[in-house]
Image (cartoon, rainbow, N blue to C red; front, side, top):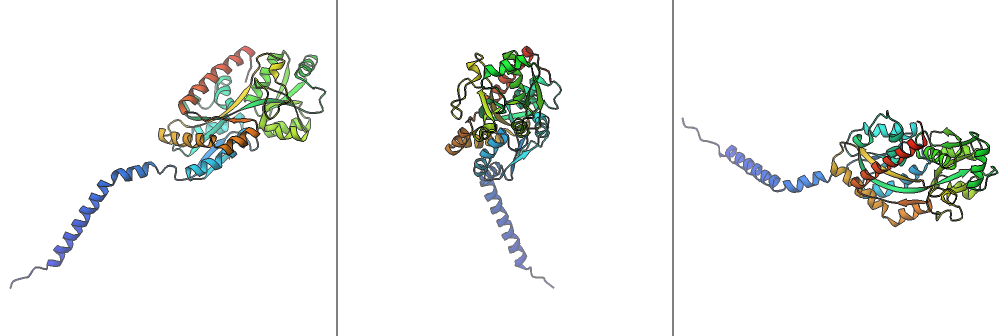
Length: 337
């Protein structure tokens, strides 16, 4: 008996083979497009900006102005995460140890990036080795804010009062080793007076106690105390920048009494050291774009803050130059942690 072969399975197999070849051809020819699409997928979830201070301070205010613009540009939510403690060390340490996947960014002050490393020798991270600089975000002048009930009207009055009452002038700060602390020590050294430092866990509790009279004065970013000056709860005794500020045009500079005195704060972003360069570049691009936005610039200017935005390489060099400058100040003034 003969058996006839069934042509259906053979034809089915042939069709499947042809479809497979066609799919392979489409996959290969479209590989460049697929690869590019994958490369452009970042970010595909929310980006966290970690700040080492409580809400309400200058850096927190700047970050919250910046975040909506970044979110629109990245097409992902940008979340501000406050991790206060140890003058920003706790927040910075958490980012140094975070997964270097591009979704965790540290936003810090000059104190975090350049002063604290020059002052404290046993930090739980190394700024130059454990972080990839992204950009300098902004800069801001500093102000001497005093309780309005003090019988002090000028910088000269403060110096005279300090010399007559050595160690009895108490100044607050956002924490040990930060710029508010260093600004106070730098002023005391330049003025030839002795003051007592009272550290707090952030700028808001620090300035609140100046308002309440628990301490007599503080050295802070203009944005932190500006609204309290306008309401009469604080007095802006002097600005610490080289020239008078547009937001406080009638307030003299310290340099008008102590020649060449200058303290200007700045804020910047960095990511964990092993974050891919293209992801660092993408965050840089987003921040720089936001800093050029007229609405952002206008809002920051009203707070006495100047928008910056530079390259990762420029910011890395600036961090190092500021470290060198403040290390010299610390040694010459014999400032201890």
